[in-house]
Length: 331
Image (cartoon, rainbow, N blue to C red; front, side, top):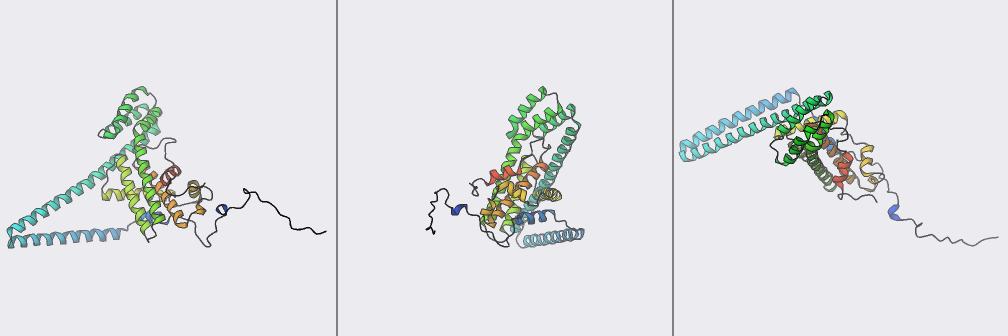
């Protein structure tokens, strides 16, 4: 006995939705790896051979000597033809020389400041390892003296100074110093890291120009590391900033933290969210996450105290706050 066609009513909730369909896979596509940050890391960790250093040193010396002799001959010849113009050019040249000397002194002062921060950090590590109350109090004294000229830390210094006499345990005193003195600095540093990660991610995702993402990653990371160093009390010039950048990148490459893995991507976007984004947006997210990793490493390098237990910033949290509203969230 034959039956006619059977009609099945589909509930509206059971009807397939296009928005919920699985994304079409891109054949041959490579998962985002953060190429811009990979190139930036290689630039920061590239070693210069002694022969190249000798070449650039000799070239700089030769060019400086040639420019100095040419400038002297120009000023003397101009003074012979017109004493007034010769005097004016001589004054300009002297001013240029003074400015150059000031810039050199600024670089030297920046290196000295960085060495002072390194000394404080080494002393803090030794004091934490020893766990003695006397060493903890000496460290707090050093920190208070180091930040004595910071108006933004005046309230924090006063609070630490008042409460330190009530603490008779070394570990508790370290926690108090981190909470009162390092806490505001950590928050300011995290804001700089979030801004840099957001900028690198946006440029990578939205600017399709070749090398634009590499340039944005390099400049943003250099600026971020300089700002983090300044927040913690280190002042760097151009050479000092590059040296600090190399130190941070070398640390990251040595620990393998620059490599973008599935755990990093999954921790940021969660589940299949990355599959709904274009490859360019995926690269932006990974570059932003790697920038956040560089920022956390910069905090570890520039901070005059090691992070206590549970106080090290989470890269995942930094990236989520940095990219909130920049890319659509999975619903």
